[in-house]
Image 1 (cartoon, rainbow, N blue to C red):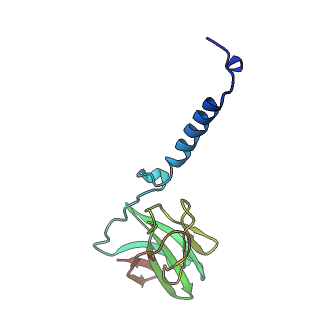
Image 2: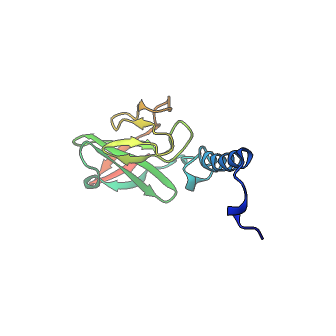
Length: 143
């Protein structure tokens, strides 16, 4: 077995290493694996789901809420007004996050408002789908 330090670094070797590294990095972009953030399919909400307590959502802020296999972004843009949006980015389906009172896609940096889910930056062109919301006894019911 030869020591790698004995092998000359030719242009072809350098390009091969660089190409392999680039392919590995790019393979994460738009991946279909939910863990990698790509192509997340938001399930249909066929019946109302208790998603969070009103006290958990700050005024002017947003949280990511889960119930079973359903994940939504819940915001309170004005006191007592609650909104619920899909957690799947409209660009390539990555799971969005709550960040600095905004909804942000970690894959390609699309940004969405907490008021209506509209796009404020990034490659996404469509707003986040919105779900009906009802408040009942201090609980946020989505669907």
